[in-house]
Length: 471
Image (cartoon, rainbow, N blue to C red; front, side, top):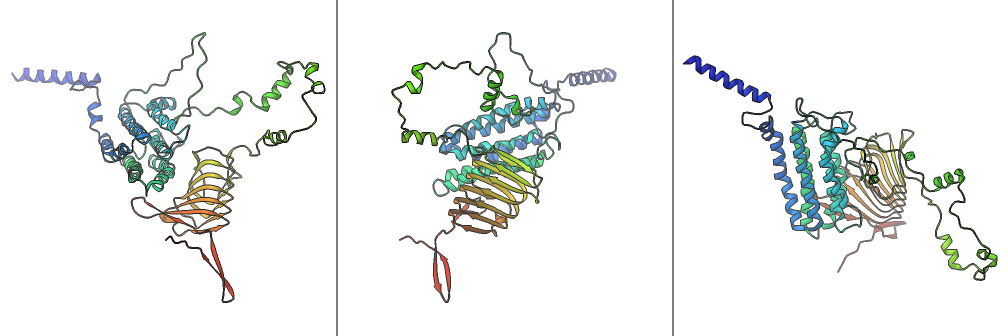
């Protein structure tokens, strides 16, 4: 009796082992599903969504419109990241091409959000930019090691939010006295990343995602050639957040402008496509032409120059000591991350752009810029704003001196560490300084005087700012 029982137990054990070896658990589910569904990191991600994402969603529901649409995409991106984290635990670490294909669902959602900020500028542009820039924090999942070109996951989340915070602060300032629902949305969005996502990554993935050593292999995107006679493929989509191919050099593009003209001349086909001038078309034989040049003709000629005085856009380190950022127009994602305290940053002739300086530098100069935003951490000497119009400067660390000279319209955002900054102004107007006023991220706005009263008293002039009091 006992021998038969032992045989039955051994047979049962053998069957279980065979099922397990075939990739099937005792409950008939694929091997690893039970462990992944109850993994602490996945459960913690659910807690993150319940605690922080719910607040953003609730505020967006009250606002509606584009704010609600972009919030839904943000939450969709977080949901996609959760699915990817589950798959990572069952997938072997892929190569770079495989990683790009693996992260494609997340990138597609991010591109949808970025598309909402393009085209005609809406009334909720700052909301859309804040949400769109914040999603780059989710790229921490692409960290594969110190040689991958990214900051470590925790630092990446913090650095990504710094760019989004530039627009998030604009929402706080614009709506703090108008509509508290927008303020609540902006605060909730920040908390979703700091401390929400940052603490989650710190607790579970401080060194990046952990791929399975014995899981399935990630598939790479197959490259299919078009069939004979098929039309040419469409132009490439916008740049992906995760890309395995470097950008093509400009020399690979067709020649345009004067380069194309010179190439046509050198080819010998100069006269192709030109019309023959007959006798009645010559100026001396035309009766509708006189020798008098009209004033309107002069104005038209002088007002349309054939070339632009501005030079080419530039963002480069010169002689290892000076970062030159020049003639950048409409660029919202300029970043200087490889800098040190011995280097200076010179920003010249930029318009409608945003530059983020990640790290301590010696000096920052912003010269002849319009609608330019600059976000920096620490500066050793000073931050100077000269000959500018409508610029915004945010100090996230410390700065001994900030000087504003010959500038019309300047918004200065100071952090708690930079409240002791000395601000010098000269020949400037519309200068506002915003300082943190509480733990909830509220900002207090202070306008610097631009009118003064000079009174000769006791043998010398005494100067005091003009104070206005309303009735």
